[in-house]
Length: 463
Image (cartoon, rainbow, N blue to C red; front, side, top):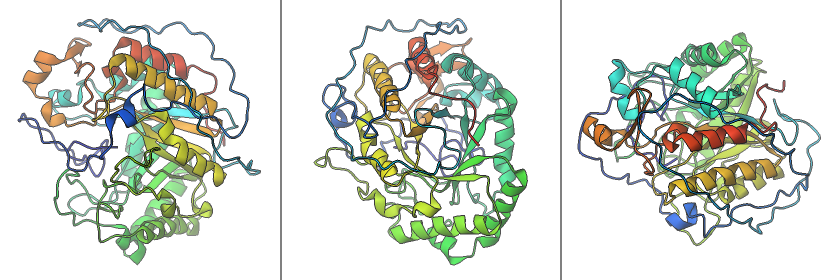
């Protein structure tokens, strides 16, 4: 994910250490944005859309018809949308798959998938200070509305929660920090929802967009054993809690230039071996403590499918793999065309792991998509999921992760669409990192709900 904001904790979406944006001139573009030709990443007319699933499985059952979900009356009209034409399938091929004999941890059957959101689980005080993030409603109202409208009332299987390892004052964050978020979510959507814990081994907050010195903990500290007491207590608390959860430890997107606590391209003091060693060390401690209710999720950033594209990431994402014994699910994050997932999907197949798409979202900075093309992209992504039977979990990044410092009161009042009696705002059809489905307008929310209504997407975890 290309970040253009002051990190909330170590990644956006943290429940603590929130920096409130002040009214100011637009911030400069991030120096860490990937050098990618927009047409290659986003243009629906030039990049192949889909690639066949090497499993050779039959496609999932036909989606049942669904009545368009209702929604509250809006105070500003949604732009009229023209019919879209889907991109033609690509001829990209995958290597043959060796069918796994053993089912992965919490893995559903082929052709079924968990689903859910990455969501803003915190509220600033007073409520008006949430306006730059596009919504001043409390979490309970926002999340309830998102489930009702964007999921058509279907209960999500998974919702992401986040807890960094350490705050800026060097206080360690216990599992209870994550549990507080889990309980907030369950109070709205029910006790069946399973957390996907983003457990970043960092000291936060810090600004990922600048050359600001990072002096927090890193993967080297994890390997050294100096953090073992903290990891061990965290493991014991999860064991005591006893319920299933997915954990992305250390960090995701580690093969790119984002995260200075774990990514060698962001911090030249670190190595790939440090990342692998820190991951294994953490998992080993959980095993020593007898923790059996965790599925470990490994998610690099996908390199461009076109090798001629200049890209700041490490294309050799495979070198960061801790090994089959240390990973339950392999996957990735993706904000570009569906075909970008091919290399990561092939890797998961080769290692007989279920595929977990931990983040995907529209309107990324650098995108050239119009509103109609965004709708076609959503269709393309769902078509990809539903034609690749080993994709077993998808979490949509339903969050405004752009440079919220640009969202001044004057800017919101003059250029934004206002919904829900002015509590919700968004800048229509602008690719600024506002991936919220509500920012795509009424028809984009309905499109998502229609596709997620496919019986492929299941609400209950397979234990």
